[in-house]
Image (cartoon, rainbow, N blue to C red; front, side):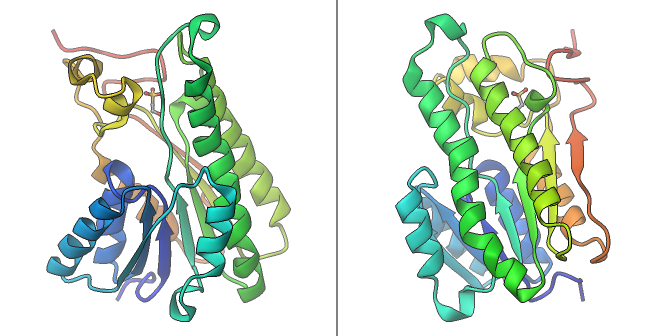
Length: 257
Ligand code: 8X3
């Protein structure tokens, strides 16, 4: 039996990519899964797939983390037997555009900051007091190599992930004296719909990002998240920076010829 068996895990942005892979990874550990995302139809489908994979203990609900009132209502309105969250995976996040800052559409900035920064804060604020009260919990935030080096045309996305890094560090400091743990998992290039979302459905442009490179897979990140969550209670993993073997940091890649 895993140390995670029976734990309740909330994953935001669970309908696709890293969130979805993380749901399967925690399911394999025997966790109870609370899954939310904007698209309920995809969550219901995921729930059916998890059930078919012998992980029937799931509860799904639609949530746009950008909506503070909706976050507060969703967390405070959870059914009694789902209200004691042991692990929060703040996975919901996105990038929009790859454009010079002074030419970019401010709508892109709003979506990134509202989701990657404010959404993460809203969910954290709604969930962590219960963890402190119960004397157990772990917050795992989805960071990025983009927090460490700013790349061309990505200022606001990089800023949002630099904010996530600072928030993770600050939350850990503020939780000193409690047993609640904080981890930031900071991947580089991952093959998911990240680039399709960034380029608003332009699959051809998205495919070029991964051209002649072996990117990380969502499952690689999911396994790392589960590893961090399954350390003994006295161990706090702060940051895990991970990239494909073909990437050194946000700007240095090796493309196969
Ligand atoms: C995703 C990594 O390099 O595309 O956060 O910004 S990158």
